[in-house]
Image (cartoon, rainbow, N blue to C red):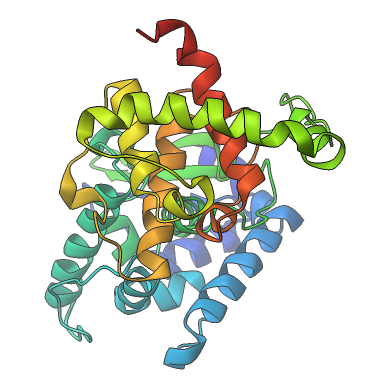
Length: 322
């Protein structure tokens, strides 16, 4: 038996109990959180936060989650969560009673998540098998990714990390691999954001100059979206559904925007929020945002937030105007 396993579970009785509770068939492997990390206060805080977020989101559907491992593995809660957050209609049964049906349902759900979040297979930190087998680490990675996309202002604790041990049952015995995984972002090296910026000053102390700045930003926007036959006259209302922001970002950054990935004519606030979150993800991936954004502010037509984002694009691309 690998010595790392004995170092983790030092008492023989604990080893026997662990293997009795977690049977690993020969040729297979499974990842566990080490006991030293299981009681990590920040991990517990994250778990409770995610449970509360799910229960709040699904309150009207009378769904109550008590355990992330035990309540999410069959796909039922994930199904309701995605339909509620992203207005996604998934072609799967509401209730899957057999393992075969659960596996099929999870496959459809996770494929929809990857498509919605625009993640390649190599970027996924979860799988059908890991969710189905109640892998807490994979379940946390999945929920954090969904929350960051649909609820980016959810105050998740930063720097949540866990020590894991992957145990593989080989013909020669148990083989283990130790690792440390970050569940939420490591923000220790990020610079603190100043409380006030130029737009705070503009709105509070120089409102007379506000129209001039808006005019410059509108000219910049229309120069680019005009190529698509669009014309923006009002920053607050026309950016609220995320469509113009997506198309503008696509024009500037050279993104191909598949119509299947966003709502061209959003019919609800949830569809608008989906569009805005997708646009913010693209901007963040391109290094164009140097401040945090609450996507709901954009949907609500917050002028200052929208102008800040447009100025980030203007600052990068104004020199490239023709």
